[in-house]
Image 1: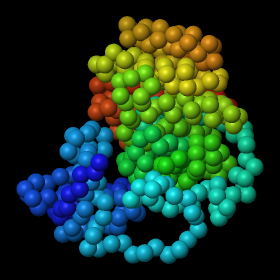
Image 2: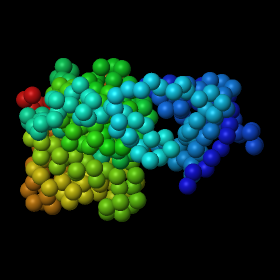
Image 3: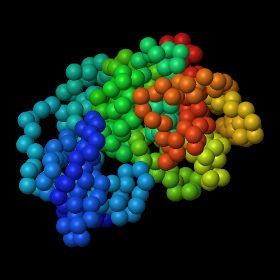
Image 4: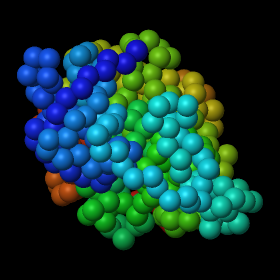
Length: 362
């Protein structure tokens, strides 16, 4: 179901990557709504332009992604692009399917490099459930080894356009990420790949990454059931990393600020993804937080190791000094509407995974 609206642009807001924030006035009642346009898809809107909107997210008052999305500038369509290489469709068979040049397809200059590529050479691959963990993981990596080349592989469990993420744009602009690979139906990275396997290989062999971080885009989907959440992809990424000869590292989703018991301490998402979906050995960095909450996290981590039949290898990681590393990030730490002061454990746990990966030889 799509709720269609027509409106007029009355204001321009922030701009990052190829995303433009707008204020759009709706003609039926004069109300103004926040909207987002992907310039690469629909063109560059200006004040006074008429826009067609999808307002599902606004009507349902969603959190992440809770804005109207510009579908078209009907009176000022972008020019027809020149024919180019690439024939891979992403967001396939939707009205906004987009054609990209896949890093691994025949027209790609990297096709020969990737055609028989089959080995990551032991590169650390850190997986995370939530997109909000990515800046924290990178901060932990850079604390002791800022020279590391870090690539982000964005899976398609959340937002499909990489441009939706202000965090990724900020990390790229600051030089904290060497590149972004969008895999599956996700698009808009520096490189486009068919799946997480070719995405990992491209991160290592094309971008030259010393460490790879894998997570879905913004907008985790969860239903409050054991299996109904999009972060199962974290377990699938561990399987892929191990299959390709990488070093899988399972970053824990931890929260001290989430009132829901299933997410307090170590989230049930981590439990399902890392003990039921992932079927390979992996390192499990556990933040040593201290106090009663830290003791709960420690007990839950022991449970994960036991439930994985020993596939997970617990690594205790001190968190002293990580707060300063997180504060140095060029992007703000936010998760599920909470910041550092509301849920420090969430970011410390992710940063601990980065600190651990940085301690490994590359």
